[in-house]
Image (tube, rainbow, N blue to C red; front, side):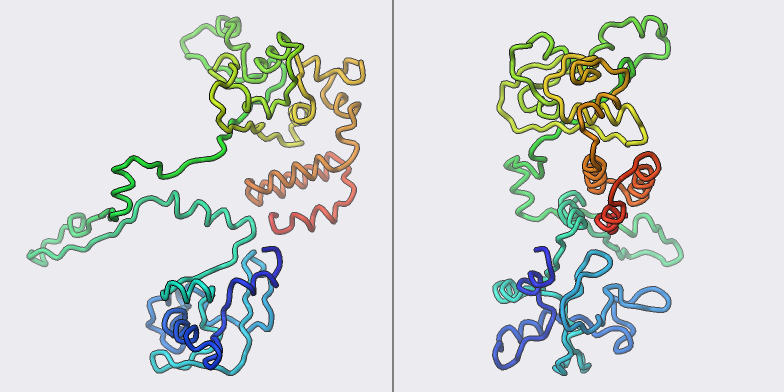
Length: 362
């Protein structure tokens, strides 16, 4: 769903015609009318705050057509047709209809709120109900006790409810959730700038001389291509599809499990580390850092010169791709800082287009 015309085919927020769609009309009146609340019924449970307002923002406003709202949620079509229904002796119109899908409402005959969430905010719905934990309820217990002595801790029990389907699911040992495909975060570091771990009691000279600290995901990736020069050449991000990392070396993957590599992010303000990441995304089968420094037969002194020689930053495409990638997981404040960094340290072409494309994320 990419535009309001698609939304109207799935979600409705109006009272149906009582003559043409009598059954659907009865179901909407029974299940999908909110309230009344607000001035019609100030003591409704949905009222909160001071001044008291409906926490679900009813009544909504009339709309002749569905439009995309400022907060990425659509404002559904609610035409003022003059059609009203009685609920709790109060007249309610289309402004009080909870969005629904006619097919699902007719099939299940129950309250079923259906919303369009085709923006990045859909991530909230993808993970919210999976990872929010068990069904719980705070139970208030009334024992036969004197009102003079009240134990507030014992009066409230934090109880967990286990339904029969969940009980069976756990008894049979079925998985509750999984991540597919598996993602491996791939390290990026400049020459001799890898992270190392050591005990504070160790001699720093021994730590520096220790051989295993020279082996990282990246250097082991170089070493494999250096030893196996006749083997296929892989991009760094594609390496986990064929190999597994045991903490010291890459081994051929025996089980054909779907696993993907993802290079850790690098900000353009980091300079050489950012250009190293850019090279690793485009150069297949490098055997060393010097191999990445080399472009068109010349050994350059910086990754920036190698990137320029290879023509990887002749346009703004990589900057915009990095901005689009960051917008998927970074907070707005970080995105604004990144955009400002691009403007200061680079000379992007169509600044206005970049601003318009990512305005919602900013």
